[in-house]
Image: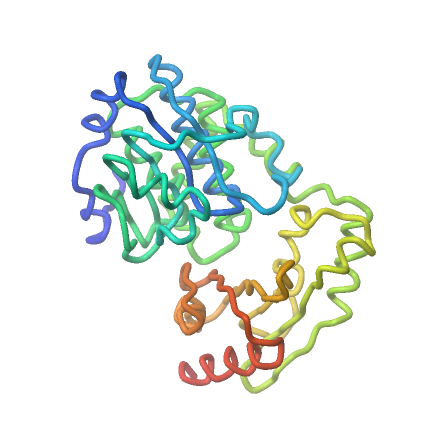
Length: 327
């Protein structure tokens, strides 16, 4: 039996109450802009559940890049190219703020009901929130609900849920890999989840051009000894120089975080408008969610992100200052 945290008890309504009255409603399933394996896995798992019940739904995400090839084991063909102007009910996965929905934000906020399923701290929107900020992934939260309601978990659903677990625990390496996470993973294997296929697709194969850009980013690494911080960056011009799509380079933060003697990793990714997106990882007591919040970003203690219009040096200095407040 799984332990429920205090925050998980924030669940305000049973999933069955949400599903049983949906057949005559228009439904959108979505998540944060440029969705990762957790957001996509959660959304597509629910899409498959609805489909098995004869419930029509649309799946749509705002995105500035293509979906990465590393996630093409998911049933991405279910994702709509366009969305309607109005929906009765909107399910939002893995998104703590409506602003992170991008162009979907207005559609979601104009709907009759928004249901947020997430593992972020204190989402700022949603008529109904099914939340556990201690969960490793949103798919973990959704899995609990599906099991509680005795929903049929097919092999396809299991693969979607497993994808979120694998990506958000870093192949079960991060500190958020609890006994519950491993128990859920084992159960999903019993339901038919293909761990080897998913892991090989996400982590076992790299485009040669991606590896060449990875080498460039590694060569740019700087280490700040006092803060035990490792930093690097990727520029817009790099994608054309190395003939690689931006969506194929999400793994870079996991490359630079390996530097021995460092506890926090920062990867800055230049955007088309000249601003930067920062990815933070921690393998110590340093809470990078607190660091990201200084840029109005967010995430989790061990993995967070933010956007900033500051230059690289200014961002690095602010990150260093925030880390020093925790030393």
